Amino acid sequence: MSVHDRVGRRAFVVGSGAALLAGGVATTGAQAAVVDGPLPDFHPALKAALTFPLAWGNSPIRDFRAWRRAARAKVEEALIVDREDGTPYAPEFGRRDEHDGYRRELVTLSLTRHERVRAALLTPHGPGPFPAVLLLHDHGAKFDIGKEKLVRPWYDDTRLASAEAWAARYFSGRFVGDELARRGYVVLATDALGWGDRGPLAYDQQQALASNFYNLGSSLAGLMAREDARAAGFLAQLDRVDRRRIAAVGFSMGAFRAWQAAALSDDLAAAAAVCWMTGLREMMVPGNNTLRGQSAYYMLHPGLPRHLDFPDVASIAAPRPMLFFDGGLDPLFPADGVRVAHDKLRAVWRSRHAEERLHLKTWPDLGHVFVDRMQDEVFTWLDTVL
Image 1 (cartoon, rainbow, N blue to C red):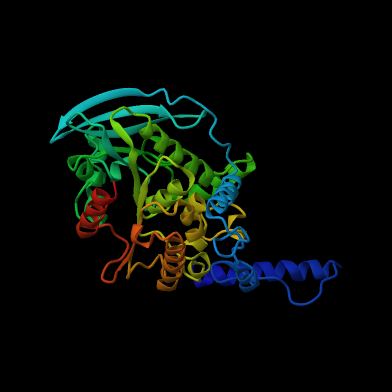
Image 2: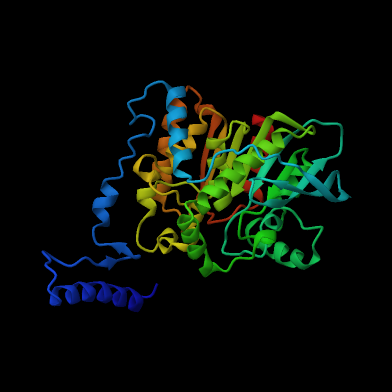
């Protein structure tokens, strides 16, 4: 939003109040206004009220397993989407292709009762069962590709150029899913609603889509959370997969999805989240992308911050192995927010005598990327914990 837009917006709000006053409506004090972001004038008071009383250490619940149940129940409530409805996955396996030590195939399945979703499934050659990775794509305001950001689209030449350009921009030219399959992991990648086969959505349609979910008594972010947890369950029931060795891995919005899925699903033994972890209060500063609305709605669960911060939700997965990487030059996640989040996470895992299972790292010379050296460290970590 430009300075002109902000000033105009403020003038409109104040002017509206003045009009009410002229019309005989009693008012007291200064008129409300929208500032910085836009944020309400009184946003410091709202931010100060975010004390996260259900966080581990703040909550009166002192038994960790009981706390996990209570915290997960609160997250489940905030999703505003029905819990697991028992819909069979009913997978239909499509086009297959043998490639460089692994098999590539498309599978269509029901992640909810509402819709069938097409996914890419990579399986290493050999007898199995194999460890597996639920690979979760980013947002990036790029909707023509979803799963194709992480798995080379052997099935669609029209998306290949777009996917290769994305891989070059963020992943050192690699397709992370193909790299994992070569290393012996089964890989599943789906499209979130709005991307790839389920799109493409236009950037400025996101807010309307999310609003209409709310109008329908549901939630866009909640749907994505439910689908990711269900996708983990699908991997766990495949004969080719060792259900004790499944991890979620994601970059950017995919990182948010990875730690969120680990909090919601016991089918995940570990999670690696690259470039999405912060404290909410520290992230909500003028100029931050989350204040624009739009993309934020994929990660917005109404009312949840009255109870839990982002790292508090991720901590529901403790003491399972978790990795969080952040870029020291990442403009989306201020250093203060990353530090606050890492401190919270470290305290939780330490309280479980499991700090060695938590891998926190900030790459001081990197921004919002998941480049080859970061990938290599994640791959080695996965080999160790799985």
